[in-house]
Length: 458
Image (cartoon, rainbow, N blue to C red; front, side, top):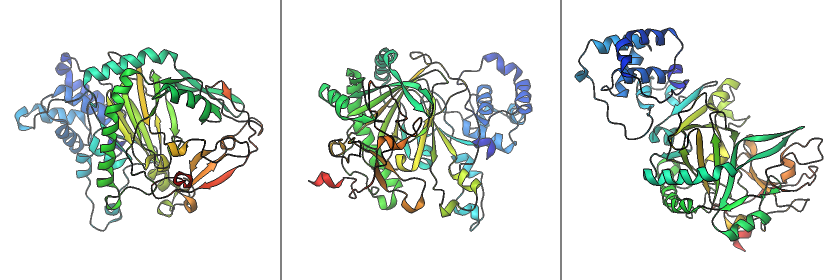
């Protein structure tokens, strides 16, 4: 399992024809070093392009990971003895867990037969196919979401905007640091743009740079909406208990009326593990994330309560349950973060050791995260703290006793200040509020089964 789970995705480049002349020496060098399963598969695929990847993986497993042994085996047989490799339908290549799971045999009634953890402490499980992603994460993915030309046009449009994006600055104890990527916020209309600048708070501040969505973004938004709603319906039917929506999940249509557009320029630009803010989205928020340009890893990990009885036997067991899963996001892929994502999982964009330049974007990845800002969660309705500032909505994640409950808190109380007397976050905004972090406002948030607050009924 270690060989399959803990691995680095190789650079997706074609192997030169002359490689076939010295495949034996290449096989030996791979076996001598500590190389990833993906790199071994890529090498074998370049040497035997007519043999499908599932067969190559099975042979590699049976040969205990020896590339040389697989090469010798295949070289002595006719290619017709093995299933032919199917033509690729998308950029990049996929690896499925199915052949790996078939190789694991468990006796009925054994502990491993009950539930085998796919994640493990210190390792990353890499997922590529939509089936694996839907089965093992709170996400689903659609590859080649837009017609190729439309995706390229949208990418070009946003690449023109990206140089004017700003990095979020925030105070971390005594230091002011910057976000490791740039971003900008887009809304449907000029009227909503003005409302965002004067009514909505983000980390205790008003956004200065809010823009109306571009023409291409508007066109694509009309396609994202039905696609996300269809994925949500599939998720409810196939993955939720009794085929019913989750408690607090809205039964209404998801409508993308706002979007953060992020730009990751180069392999080192990233964002750490976090949950997206629920304040204006409400509980069980759903987000549609469209990736354009350079392919990057989107990593997720489950949040396990410290006092969770299921994983209370050891710290290692809890760490295994929190193990990282990497979802590979190629150009023109739509990832849907479903209703269980923000409350029970964290996600990040991991720094990459290297990237494959995109023919249009170069080293840049553009990411549009479409969101549904619900009117019932407008700051005019939400509780005000002692600072007379609209509060932020949070979910209890680490304490089993109250896990899953929501609370309204003061922005200032969320982060440590320099000396306990000022707000720690100083985002990219000009209108920063300087309320005291001594405000300890706290109030449990109450919602009906559809995630609506009490004031929505009045």
